[in-house]
Image (cartoon, rainbow, N blue to C red; front, side, top):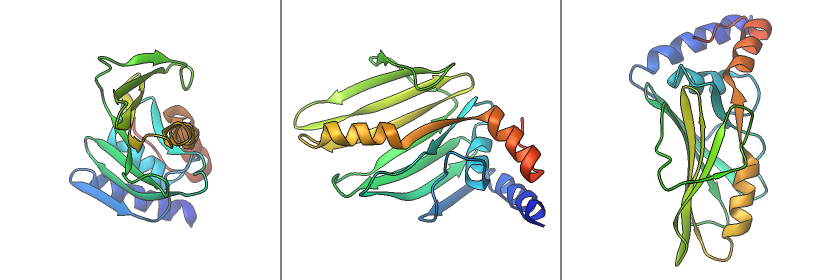
Length: 178
């Protein structure tokens, strides 16, 4: 019965992607096979990876997931930051003026772009991979920024589309295209 509900839910979600699907609050797309991760993956069908939340550090909350046919955005907040953090999945991104850093995963090129150092520490973490990219936009007050960026890097991870596709098909009898 569970796989029947998931198939129906994925079909409804796929229909919604033609317009817009918005989910505020609720549960974050975790780094495990599930509906929220599948919906996010369908928003950029050629992306080899999908952003996910491994575990939120103390004081961090998941605020929402917005998905449409051009990508998806995960919104996070920290009790020590005065601005939202946005994690975006898109088919491409601009790495101009970004510095290469240690890759997040095999087959991923990872960059860091700092837009401002003072009075605020603002920038982007970028993961570029076949068929897509993930950007993490942050804007923190100076002083707390080092700990917050470190926590953010630990909380946001990548889940492979191949692993998601195999798990959904094998465990839940759900097909993820392509």
